[in-house]
Amino acid sequence: MIKNAIYPGSFDPFTNGHLDIVKKAAALFDQVYIVIGVNANKRRSFGSAKMAAAIEETLREQAITNAQVLVHDGLVAEYAKDQGIGYMIRGLRNNMDYNYEENIAEVNKLIAPQLEYVYFRAENVAVSSSMVKELHSYGMDVKAYVPGPVYRIL
Image (tube, rainbow, N blue to C red):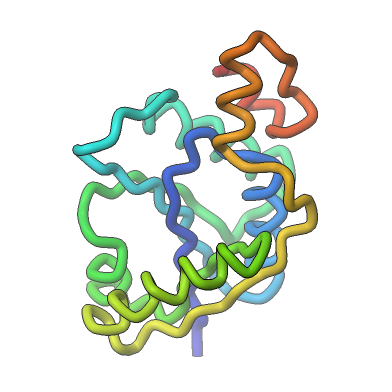
């Protein structure tokens, strides 16, 4: 039986922490769908199409062949249900992330009861998209926190 997983997020921008989670998920699942969620109420700092292309380039550079990137503007749980995806991947940095994710998981389980959540422990708990954006806005070099293809579009 094929085990597919979905890893949703804004990935604004995609960080080395996100890449670490993708590597862990790709080692366990047959196919990993990295889904850039589009929220009409939020303004992105970096375009979703450019970010998707940078993530795809990162996957090629890392030789991760069982992951693909897509942009989706609907409910992620509904997409997972429609595509027959059984697992939702999330990265956790701390107990606040866990509590936040568990609340979202409860809602998603109402939409897609088949979804099983798989949490991966983040290796570098200080790295986040928010941190990268803030450092970048102050002119700091963020090369150490994002994959090369992402750095090039920043």
